[in-house]
Length: 339
Image (cartoon, rainbow, N blue to C red; front, side, top):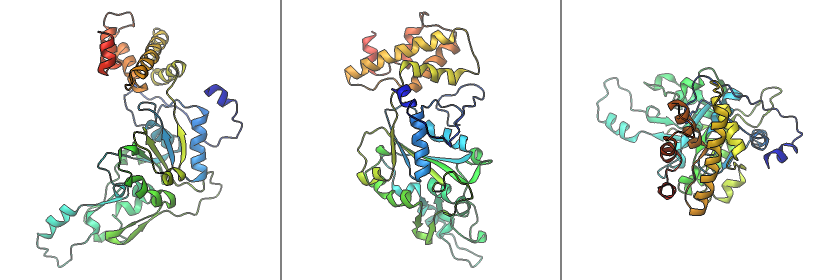
């Protein structure tokens, strides 16, 4: 299907994407060094950049949805931020927070300098604030540096140090885990890239004047949102997004993914190893589908390869069945089938 799709794309792409393996492969890496994509996914990113809309990625767990944001940020040399959503997440958490407990504690301490206790000191910028206006985020929304005793720290400072200060990619991961009020609460901030910080009466936004010859004049912050579709998202939220579904990779695609991740140390036995484990993963995926349980993911496929390569094993080794149970057959129903 992907090959047929590729033949239909004739547009002149503005988005250059490259993999740069650097050192040993690492699980759950957020550096964005390696990502195997097809042209349909690349087009989805370009549509989001061109339209100035968030990109919502649908797909099963482990299909690479969360890894895309760091990869795009590195290729564009834009700053990177992420927020992993939980059941306790509120929409405001992505915008700003208030350390009310800290402020209450400090209010009990007499101030000898005659100054009043301010609000700015206790404002904590969220990822969207850092993405839209990092200078304001550092100063916690104040225009006067002297009004605060401590500046806010960029949560991804080590990644962002040499990247474009005016552009950012934001990952909002697993938004379907949150209450429906969360996507509803993000409609305006994501639509206008602007929000209000109530305690300090501060509006945070971006300068909409694009530089000359800007390929994406409507996008100074690309927001990538992922969902495992455990809960339906509001229609109004979907209308504000570019939506793309990432399919589970075929065995051929799994092999390409392995080759990209492990190509910095090429071993003669790698090619048959990648193929054998990919075939096993596809079999287990079908078995999981029949039994109504979650299948092993691409991430677990890579874990199995790491284990076999690192331990000097092969698929024919007696230990392989144990590795398979430990890494690929985690669900009890799948494990029982091998007992």
